[in-house]
Image 1: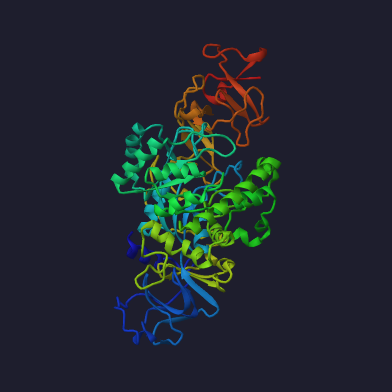
Image 2: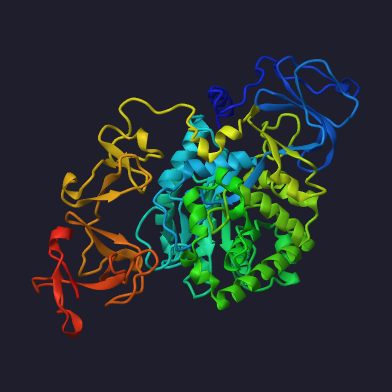
Length: 629
């Protein structure tokens, strides 16, 4: 984890990012004193949080917390404390608690409507929002593997200010299954498992990235049926993961999914089922197996409120400090929310939300371990902010406040196998949050963050507000820069004449297709200061439509073709919200209608149906192709 180097790197940030404070070095480790000696705390370079309530991850009471370097040195549950040394911070009327842990985050997913496409992945924005909210550790359960593993490496090396990051990398699902249904182009987000024979190949691709956990997807589908992993495949995955020493967590949305996972020995679940109710018998079986559930109630809550036009937080000007302005605007756009505002969808999401809350209570009463996660990146499930809403929803569903707070601290840390996180006790990493009020009496106190300490260092939360534009890089990358095809997380880190493309790889900078080599097209990226980058096509065949998983082969210009998401429209039907059409058709963005592909030379494709005319688009595509009009 390189905790020491991370702490030193964070302390090296300019005062623009970190609030100035007394040096934390130079005290050395101390053995626990006798109970009588604990009445006095003394450490010349320490930070002493005195006068408030302390929730240590399991219990709460009036106490004093002493931070030395990047560790908690002492916690004294006694009001009669004499401070003989250190910087004293008066936290009267406040609660000191461990840094929050979110066990379900999608770092690269924006929290806009499902029909919203954002060219900027907002990784740095999401990281800032989590830090500002006091989320000091999180588990990414689904992001492009080359990008998320790069972010994890930089965070652990201290090159970027970020929460402790754990990541699953690519998800294991059936071909055509969630979250890569038919129409998903090949990439590094999903690995498809259709039989136990596919497991070895998938693990060969997965394990070199050193995932902290392996995520499998058991999803029968909500509004339409989806293929899912077979029980034999789940068992084979669990066996291979056990041999590799990596835990498995299952995305599950129905009681049947849980049964399949338990039969294979998988006991961690990324959601509480919301399609139907869990029986008390199944809940007792889960508890007996030592199951852990991360409910993500906030997902259905966000969808329910979006469907019923009840996202009141959008009216709060302060939301812009944590959520990109374009995402807020998208959530205000009725055209992007039309699909979830139908009467039928409102009925469904109301039912799903009720099922999820009831199932949470059934599992909690049966003794199933509950840990907290938000599934940030779903509509209106904002990074950082959503976790505290999740804790409030756990309480609303019937959990005791002390257990709900533990779910986002100590219990979550135990799920990660990190006993130095999620607690305030001697030797724990000094990830500490101070909030105004008492969250055990009013869980909404988690929204009133006063201070955040990351590895013992006080963060300047104001400087991390999005409008300030503060860089999180503690060690900016200099020199020649990354080469073509290498992973990039921000535009400036690519080498000369290169830009960071939409898929976070360095590519040649361009302003027109002719600036790119044959077989690559210039794609504009509004989030890049260089404007556009040359993206290599994958050479798919426009007429054979030979892409994997039902994706559509489309032309992107300059002789380049690429597998891309497929829609359902063709032959003059409307394009989908993301300007996609069925394989063999292309979206004409000017008219937002799907037009069938044709061969203007009449060599590779049949004539246009209904006597339509094949209009040559070779000049645009750089290939002999046309569209039917």
